[in-house]
Length: 300
Ligand code: CP
Ligand code: NVA
Image 1 (cartoon, rainbow, N blue to C red):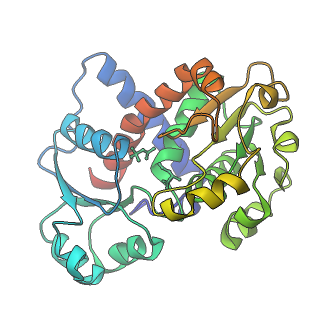
Image 2: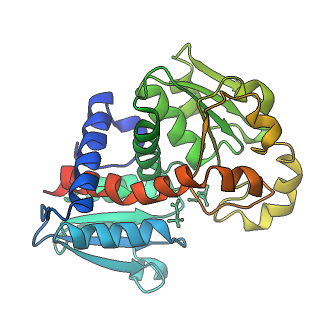
């Protein structure tokens, strides 16, 4: 494993290794056991979009590993004034030990990896959010004691979160059921991968998708960069909500996850959100541990 660009690139064994290391690092942190695996290393963190969790968890994680994080807002980098990503990659590779990037186009992340000579970590693109899904899998395993054989149901936009969840959950042996409006299905690349699995289902019916689910997950109706479409999307996604009614169709001990930020009364009701806040905020915490594991695997 040289980079973390998308879940499609990871093998099941690599996912399991990351989750195992994340559990160990979480244990060590809770027990004040130092783990300076990245002493003397530097991580550049390029942000072309806003972030609370990704920025703070990578920055803190790098500190806890003995390394040094640099926050690089694209507004202040020459990227923001048009310097090509290919040149940025070759320059930053000469200063840093690794780069985490949050941007729009997946092709930019792939170009950084192609032209640079250091590990690249995808901190979210329009196409995928692998760091979040590793934390989600870690959280599911923590609460359920296993992954294989469980059913994950995703309700909402066939966007970055859905894409990574579909791939990640199928790779670890979970059944996946996704409910999206027809015009908001995941892209062909993801569906082509998913359709190789008998345990994958795509529907426009949240009721169908939620049936007997062990884990229900949703995401905002309008993602970063889609603010102009918010009104149109509010109409298209009406009914694609995790609420009490939907929860009655899932298993009685089903858990609920949300990558956050959440829009209450849109994709999830306040009541369901608060009833499952224990899982949701453990999921947020696990970003830290899962990403530390990724950084150790790639940069130590
Ligand atoms: N879930 C997530 O990536 O959160 P941020 O946008 O706050 O980083
Ligand atoms: N789909 C959301 C995820 C935020 C973490 C977005 O891209 O804005």
